Length: 156
Image 1 (spheres, rainbow, N blue to C red):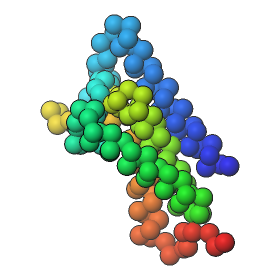
Image 2 (cartoon, rainbow, N blue to C red; image 1 turned 90 degrees about the horizontal axis):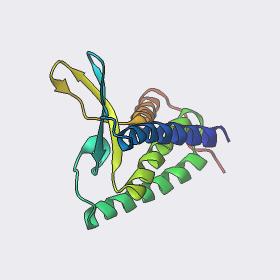
Image 3 (tube, rainbow, N blue to C red; image 1 turned 135 degrees about the horizontal axis):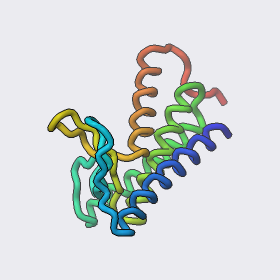
Image 4 (cartoon, rainbow, N blue to C red; image 1 turned 180 degrees about the vertical axis):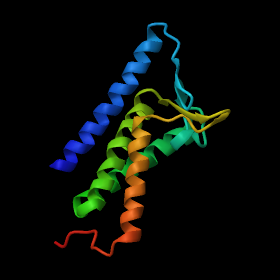
């Protein structure tokens, strides 16, 4: 039940942040905000995978990639049901973020990204709230795998 709430909260936080920036753009506001020397908010549309990799137009490859992401989400849900401890929480983080981006891929045919981290003229990939949780979940999953010897699946 806790993990379901985590997934729902991440999904809602992601949707709310995206809707906020999309509404700004829809009302004629230029979504290009300087926050400080290493952070801007800049709205772009990502048609690729995570962090804009392999961007493509909404064609058969885009739809196949979207279907693959949906299948991976289904697999992650089954893994979540069988996992325990920190593994289950890391999977919940990944699912929450991934569902947010999957929704956008289906609804908008692209994912709105708006967080621009940079140092001087070097800019990291523009990303969103969902990407933060997906990345955090993957890092926690790897760290638990590397530094613990506990069982990750529940015995039936």
